[in-house]
Length: 308
Image (tube, rainbow, N blue to C red; front, top):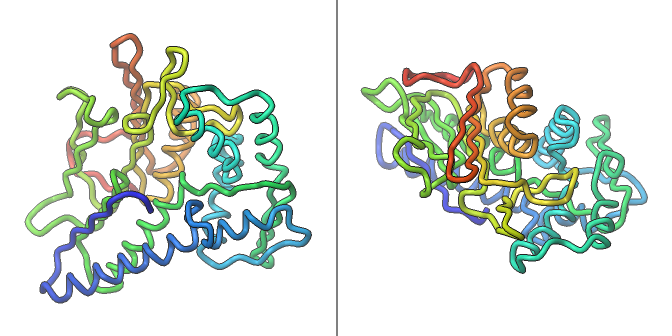
């Protein structure tokens, strides 16, 4: 999925650990062939390439689950999260490479293929209908979290009760390591640019944590720093520097909420987080060399936390 993955397990034997991890990695590879918009022959890429579809197209179970969850988050966030954002993401990637804002006419053309009215799911037959030409479904804000959760299920199926999966900062943990109360996860909203006070250690069990922001992928245009995360409502990257770290019971939720909250900003994002049981968030912004933080009411103390 374009990032390094690390799986850590505690098992009765090396053989048991190796077998469980091999199957978990195989599950991630299988899902990449379904959910990756970088792979032109993945299931989601083939669905996008068929747009506009004259008739609804049946999709597989995994793609259906991710698309259904994506549409739920789209509706819950008033479009701050949108699986149809792909045409705008493609345009913004070019701006990140060139350092030049998208042309107004190209932005308008891309926006015609994005939004609630362009995409319809039918639960009765697990089908998707793409109404506009040149659509491109982008599951980057939720697909990795889903893959982590499925890989964790594979480990559990092998009897692994204590595990951590880290996909370049998207992290899920199950039961604590032997002799410990929790997994200790250090988070830094601004990555290597965070100083000591910007780093926190979270003690987590049966939970997921992910950070969304501009720490590693950003561009400065006309003196403004923009994230790689695209606001579906404007077609432009989210202004920064800013980051959101989200804790949830599962990584699918943590991934989607972090993406949506990054787009929504601290005020609206905090309102969203406070409505979600078991979800906590830390919003960090940096302006003029000053750092500001906003924490949700459930942001944990340093004692072990279970996101339930």
